[in-house]
Amino acid sequence: MPTYQYACTACDHEFEAFQSFTEDSLTVCPECKGEIKKVYSAVGVVFKGSGFYKTDSAKSSTASVPAATTAPSTPPPAAPPTAAKSD
Ligand SMILES: [Zn+2]
Image (cartoon, rainbow, N blue to C red; front, side, top):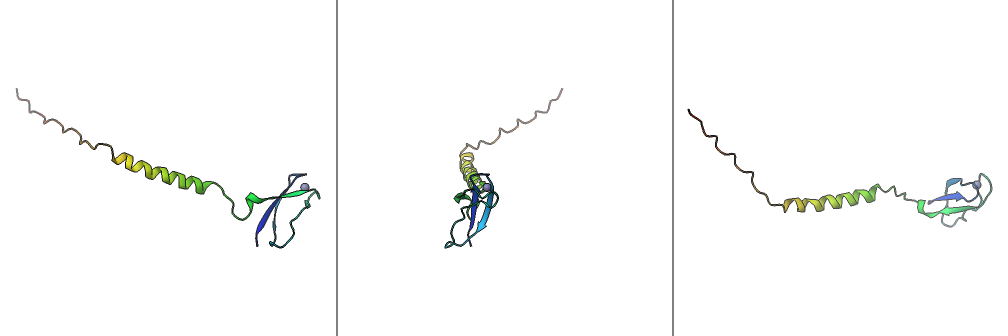
């Protein structure tokens, strides 16, 4: 059964209601009997935003990998042999 979220236009009271698709939408606020409206964005799945950020960061992290490997891998200069000083 879908969950509908309502918000009162009079007192800003927000609440959720379990209703079937065939059921009539609620129109009256249980708190103040004022007019309420459906909040469609909150129905069912709530997007917290973490999913989008996770996908975004994963995409950018994988993109940075080839960029790093393309850098010329020059071996570090060999340390000069320490000449044994003899006096
Ligand atoms: Zn209300």
